[in-house]
Amino acid sequence: MTATGPQSQTNRSISPAMRHLIGLRADLRGVSQSNLEWLGDDPVLGFLAPVYGFAPVAPRNMARYVLLRSVLDRVLKVLDAANISVVLLKGLYYAEHLYPGPALRPTQDIDLLVSARDFARAVMALQTSGWKLLAGSPYAQSSLCNSAGQIELDAEFDPQSFLSPGEANFQDSTGVDIDLHWHISP
Image 1 (cartoon, rainbow, N blue to C red):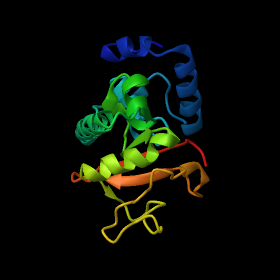
Image 2: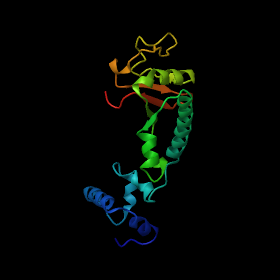
Image 3: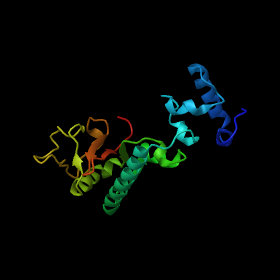
Image 4: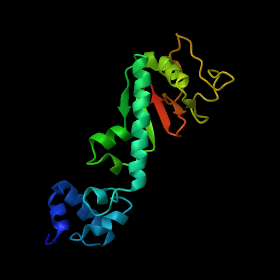
């Protein structure tokens, strides 16, 4: 590449594999590989534009990340107080560990994994702390809900024997959705 200025410094940080992917996409679109400003408008590789300095991080993405992170911190405190181990899945984990900046990966909800044996206690802990079961949750229309819409599970409840996608969906007062999984795939 013979680009000059700040773009040439940015281009030097692009890995050979990423440069190859960008080249394939540029060929497909019929655009220049030497001027990567088209990245910001590309529906497939557009997420790379802020990474390489061709577009700013969307303020909306940054605000959403800050909100999700603060909700996650609250959820983790609730589950920790109930002595429940939890694994952060997908969105926020990827944003914080796989991207140069967490706001570069748009994230809509929080996905958490708890063990099947801790699922009932995790559900109770979230509900007691103000999270509401969402109407679309696999449990929302089940016989497990009381008249207030809260899940009522006895100590012997075995989530592995319940036919569902392996998650319950909650929402907090800020509108953030939490998907509480007890296994990753049904």
